[in-house]
Image (tube, rainbow, N blue to C red; front, side):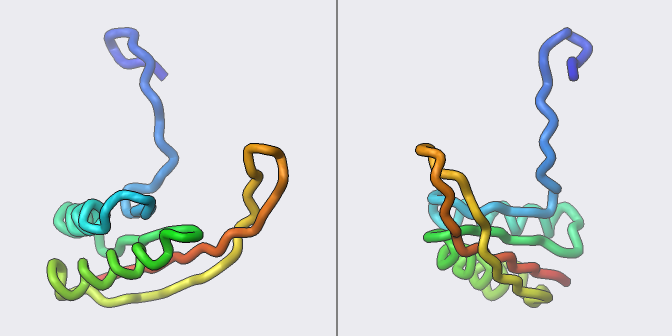
Length: 102
């Protein structure tokens, strides 16, 4: 897709109310969650895989207890996802999805 100046624009298939937790400090993701709620979102989904699951739980708790105190955990889902490594082998990784809602 191109904008009016002919430059290439990328479309993102990530829904707006989803925060993917990675290796950055937890407060970066807390800010993203708080921003979603301040922009009018009724619910925000926090997703993480593997070693970042603990950080995702921290993000949910910090956001819920310190910044957006009128939210509650609506649902927690755990699963395993199969990923393909760089060398072509497949491995299973744990995943978590935490839904905070007002």
